[in-house]
Image (cartoon, rainbow, N blue to C red; front, side):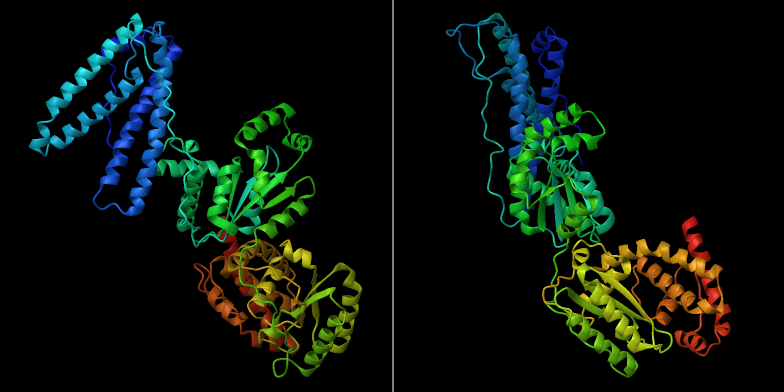
Amino acid sequence: MILPIPPLILPDGLAEAVQTLPDKDCRRLTQALEGLHAVNSRLWEAEDRVRAADASPVAVADAKRAIDQLNAERNQLAERADEVLATLATTASAETPVHTETIAGSLDRLSVLTLRVFHTERAAVLDDLIARRVPTLHQQRDELGAAIDILTIEVMSGRRRLPNAARHKLYGRDEAVSVTMRPARGIDKVVAFGGLSECGKSTSARYLVDFHGAQRLKIGYLLQQGALRRGLSDPYQLSAARQAELLLEELNRFAEGHRDVRLFTIESVHDDASIAELKELMGDVLQIVYLDVPFDVRATRSGTCPQAVAAKDEVKLSRGAHRVLEVADFVLDNTGSVLDLRAWLAHIAQRPAVQPDQSPTAIPQPPDVPTTVADATAALADTLRSAGPAVQLAALTGSPVQGAWIPGWSDLDLLVVADHQAAPAVSRALADYRRRLGDVASVGLTLVTADELLAHRLVPRLAFALYNIQNGMPVLHRTATLHVPVITPDDLARAAVRELPQVVITLRRLRAEATPGILRQLYKHIVLAARLILRENGQWTSGPDQILAAASNLPGLGPLDLPTLQSVADAWREGTPDNALSTVIAAADRLLAWYALQLAA
């Protein structure tokens, strides 16, 4: 519980003297003395925390740091008050007797004595022995007030001069950072953005938020939160090492409270010293990115006059923003395209994970798939492998590797990662593959480059295929040098959110055009929409029948009453799609109506 503190009342003689000062000086003095009294009150509380019988070593250390910071503020506020009070003095000679302390020094003691009276009177209610001290404390306070009045008169008359008010305390100097501080387990990576005005820091952070699920934070917010928690009024007066500790403490606290977030961005990195200290604490978990953009480009992008950009630059330069470049992990020239910037950001934001050197290779074999498919696929793998290093990966990603192959119904989804110049070789291999398959199955090709993978330019279907590969799904061919980006379940959940609207639009079109000839497409899109809705709700289910059963349990949806996959596939292969079409259309109507209701809600 925070107790209201008694006000600091100036002795009558000093109060009258202060009234003779200009209004501006009166306001400055009032602010300084009110701040000094508040700091003394917080110091009292911090010292109580140190003396608490149940205080842990960590709590004692934290309270001691708070005491050091508060003492630094105490001295700064006293000096500020003395700057005003010194104007009351009449010019005195070197022979004039000097007082032992400044007027603000005496007021500082009066502030502490006022607090002592207040806390003693509260404790005296329950302790008669303490109650006996109260009259003595009142007398001490009255005598100190009278002495301050006498000092004021002597200073104003020139009979006494004040000592130099500068205290030259060393509070806040660089101290050794605790080697035990580490990033919380919930933090995979923190990307810190530095640079001058209008260089693209906010744009970069928003990209990582929108496309990589990052949590965006400001250094100022973290420092202020840490200062409030520690009872410090100005965290920027701390040493760079202590600022770094506060930043990491608040990052860890935020991560503990938001377990679903693994990637963080922090902006407004304008101090090279504190961010360098934070790097010492966090290591490679922290990636410092400096966006380097010439002034004329930044001024043009700002939409304001160059003078406004220059004025903001001056503030940042005074804090050392330009020196962040010297401690940055990445210095990005942000004068190019947005695609170039995003590719770098996606690379930087990649989460650390164990990546297998090589995925297992396997060709689908009977009885899972027909011999024709297995033989044609083996020939395809040999052809792509012989194309050399330009073709880096080939994999079947659909039902052949998921154990759900149905002849006459299932497709072959082929993923190929290859350099662009390898496109003709891939085209020839694909034509030969289709020739060997005949009418057994159709083939759908996804062709991407390794650079697109590294830049995370991934459509949701491709992200899901890569997720399966990194979790052991066999491939047809893979070079040892290919790096497949790590895909997390969170990535897939975000991909589901982005893909679902397009799938629903396609499902609605198929429903409007419903004929026996599109039964297969309509059914597959119902399953796909249901799977994405489940993922968005945190449910991971595979297999069409299992997906539809799980979707039926979604609140408000109810059973879709679809026949099994095998029944629909049999009707399709036997040329009797009419037998299943009406049931599939009814299921599509139910799912689309439910989805529309969710959006309306």
